[in-house]
Image (cartoon, rainbow, N blue to C red; front, top):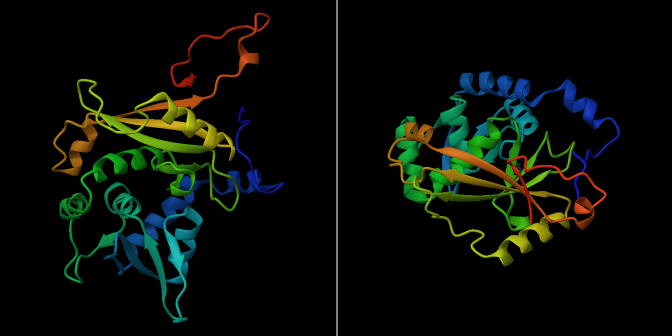
Length: 252
């Protein structure tokens, strides 16, 4: 199955997206969040942020977190994932975070807090940051059996294009992740994702041997992108022009 680009959910939704670029909306969110007195608080494995109507609209338009419905008309809340919380705090530098209702914490303290909850947080955050910094909308991909699914714009306008699997290796090329160790894993992932019209995107975080004691050390890592598709026999017939390997697109 070949994908033919973004699948918009409405006739004029592509024009709507082009006239409301995600980068511009995120810039508005940065200003609004920076001026807000509200701080995100840990709740379970996620974070809770009290919002005002303007901030609620911007978080929704940029598809960060999800709004929680409450019985209080005067209060609005958003639930943010660990990756979303740290991205807003670390990369966009606009979100305040407080632990145990205490004083606001800095990026190093929040980093240590995230690592204490999950030793693999640096890996998944690095992959999340790689995609979000390119203005892709990134959501958890649990329903599709992958780590993330990514959208070209807001999920209300377009279907997700990629199902993302995150793996990692050490500096010397030694495989560390436990994903896609055998061919059957790869075939199952591709078949499942093709069934819902998504391409499989493998993100390999390289440099896992780096000491992740500080978030600044993420700069020493790199992310290798590989789009993987099923082999289509018609593409390799004798009467077709064979194209060379383009580096980031692999068929099996």
